[in-house]
Image (cartoon, rainbow, N blue to C red):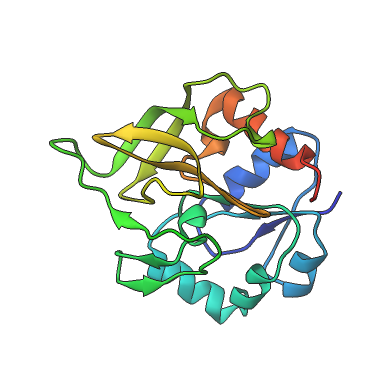
Length: 198
């Protein structure tokens, strides 16, 4: 199976690659549009600011490439947010693949960024969640979030509920870091890699 981790120029690529390698796969880290299109599964990792990430994708000619993919794609953390429409972080346009804005978190009296372990409540039945118990803990680090919408597949509450998993067609996104979430996170990555292409 051809697995590509999209080289978005961000810092968590190595940890995502290591998590995939632990499952016995050999992922390719690349920004080559042809290699990304040829992959069976595509990861879109991201940390940092939405503006810098979109600039990187644009400079590498990857905006149209990602938008045209028909195989399963998993956006992680900022990578999930990039799948949305617009971000309040710099008021920029995103990839527009999932109809959701990205908004600054304003949890009443709680510190931002939202950092640490929190539970995830599944609101849809996805292959991504196979063998993962309801209300499992995952590791989060983020200051912006997607509100609950029709594309929400799981929610997390930090002051208020937000989308911790999004799904639209072949595009999936997780706000947490599965590669930093122990065996539960590894199980989610395994489920993504074993997912049948629709």
